[in-house]
Length: 129
Figure 1 (cartoon, rainbow, N blue to C red):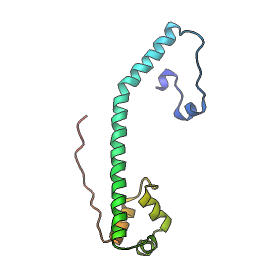
Figure 2: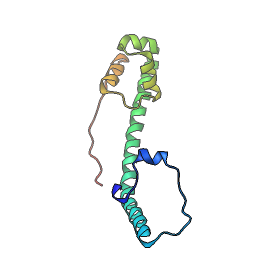
Figure 3: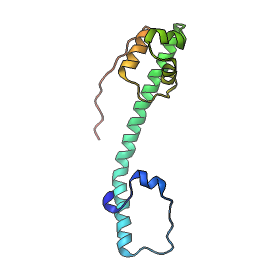
């Protein structure tokens, strides 16, 4: 979209919306029409990718909820888990509450082992687009 004279997202967030007090000339109208068409072509793919990422995030949140349930089922506190994993209590709490959006596999494995579980990661075929 930079070919169309659009700003980067960083610049766009600092610029206030301007309204036109005149009609667009044919060149400007064509430019904006081309931008709208370009966005219309790209938007479905962007929306699909967003939904896929949201689904992955939901799966991770579900995993963290399962880990918390396993900890509570074993009667362990976050302090107990700190001793078992060597991880900070605040890091464990953030993991459980979803405030840590991208935990490492190592973190998840350590937590799972501490509550008597093991982490299973699978690979699935993606849907054809």
